[in-house]
Amino acid sequence: MCLAIPSKIINVNGYNALVDVMGARREVSLMLLPEEAKEGDYVLVHAGFAIQKVDEETAQDSLNLLREIAEKLEAEGY
Amino acid sequence: MKKADAIRGYLERIMQKIGRPVRLMEVCGTHTVSIFRHGIRSLLPEGLELLSGPGCPVCVTSIEDIDRAIKISEQSGAILTTFGDMMRVPGSYRSFYEARAEGADIRFVYSPSDALRLAKKTPERKVVFFGAGFETTSPLVASVIKVALEEGIKNFYVYSVHKLVPPALRALLQDKEVRVDGFILPGHVSTIIGIRPYEFLASEFNRPGVITGFSPDEIIEGVGMLLRQIASGRAEIEIQYKKVVRPEGNPQALKILYEVFSEADSYWRGIGNIPLSGLEPSERYSFVDAKRVFDISVQSKPEPKACSCGEVLRGVKKPTDCPLFGKACTPERPVGACMVSTEGSCSAYYRYGRY
Ligand code: SF4
Image 1 (cartoon, each protein chain N blue to C red):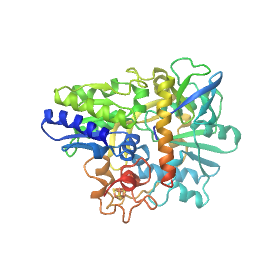
Image 2: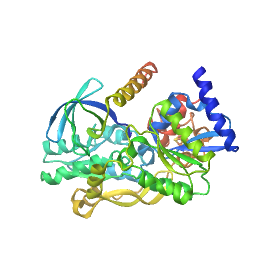
Image 3: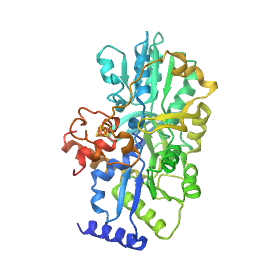
Image 4: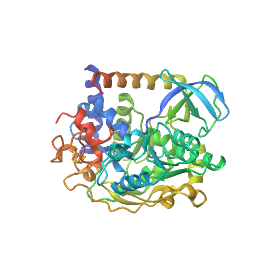
């Protein structure tokens, strides 16, 4: 339940941003980010809020892991 | 397989240096699932045991809180909103899901912002968000409450069952039945709270803790760091998940969290009351507190007697020690909360365990 998913910022609009989360576009709040974020940055997203900036490599690593898990889940029929 | 042998050999060498059995607890449900899914237990050398702790917010939400929220949902004009994971948790008589089938307006949302949006869209209704989750989630709810105040939204309420991880670890270490030599600490909770709230583990209880990421390699590295500390007689809080977690956590999120919420005692399902382990809206924000606004008088039943969830959550028993496990209690028909959530220990054992 505490899982946060890395997402790429597509554009920033005040305290909100449009992000790409594993291919889906979502509006997220930037209110909890300790520093400024801009287009192209990666952020960890938990339930509609960006909670931390991460670098691209870290983001890609955890996305690959999540994809792997998602595929396994699918294969197991969940 | 080569890699598996190398890992086992590496852990074995440190274990030999330690020269006694070691029990490590992973506190976070996401770790529990990752450990099972990647077969990490099969890589552990003799004498090294991984226990799952109380790290699933769904599993520790009390029966009484479920009953009270259902009672709220039955009051005129109310809409109860919650995260999807909560829907099937059994209360004394019904789950949210069953109450909804009987006509209560209960909806699941992806984000607490969705609940606030619903309140704006339906000003004639009272929208209540059932706020469950640890420190990863509570700052989100706090910021939504702040927005509700700023925008003057009067029909939005929160029923907080938010819980704090460090006080639960303290309660475990004070429990004579619980034997844990070190903690694999949660990655995303720590993204928010940083290192400081865990320091008592080392300074007061002489137990090491390592904030760890979620991939199999990261978990192995975290376990290795813990074992090396134990081997050299150290007890410190270290960060394996350095790419994401900063020692100071997320100060912005903490500021909003403690502006809106105050610490309060909280009842953990299967464990009991833990002092100052929960969060309730502070005085200034008490107007959103559903516990004050609605009638929440209920007669709750005790936990099902045969369910060993309490012992499982404290790492005293394994799910397979429970007589109901896999028989009367399955993910399709859960008896206890540990079987409901995909991150619950019983559910993880059921789905991946070789029992
Ligand atoms: S198997 Fe079911 S009844 Fe037994 S401890 Fe787990 S949740 Fe409770």
